Length: 117
Length: 111
Image 1 (cartoon, one colour):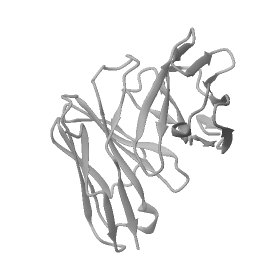
Image 2 (cartoon, chains in turn cyan, green):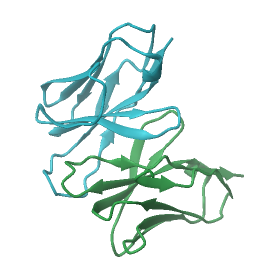
Image 3 (tube, one colour):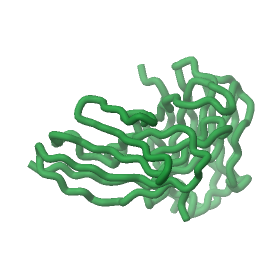
Image 4 (cartoon, chains in turn orange, brown):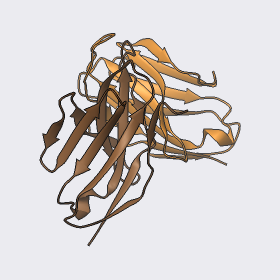
């Protein structure tokens, strides 16, 4: 059983389209994340949800809208896709530990390679 | 200046040799430190946490130097399977688990 699974694995789409990436974790974790890895391999957090509540919203264009229907799922919807959105998007989860706590492992999905043409 | 900086490499290492590399972080409020490993076109996976006193996990040794704000990773007796990108990861106090990644150090172990 895959701990954190995201679909699709590959996504090729035209500029201006709207697309969604789905993520599910079966680890019983309370916290889920979306990270973006750009062409320079730099991983940067986009959003974090704790038990369906938005905790972290980095400076991400509002074309990106996360949705968490329950604590095991965190989907990412992207409107009006642009060339610069091409990247690998990773979903992750970790055990909730609250503000100020430390030292927990994040488990990543296999990534969604988004190519905007 | 990036918050977490790493030498991108690649570090070309003969099989059986030792390789070591560092990562520097800019925020003195950094609380927790990790090394993750990422294979080509795969997801990052935790390799090891880094503790203040330094810690070892088999052939891997991690050190933390808070005064100079860097962490290090040493790999002994390198195996071909150690070829990967090693990501330095830092979390800040009160950051709700937000992981700050370095861009990674690529290690290539050659036969």
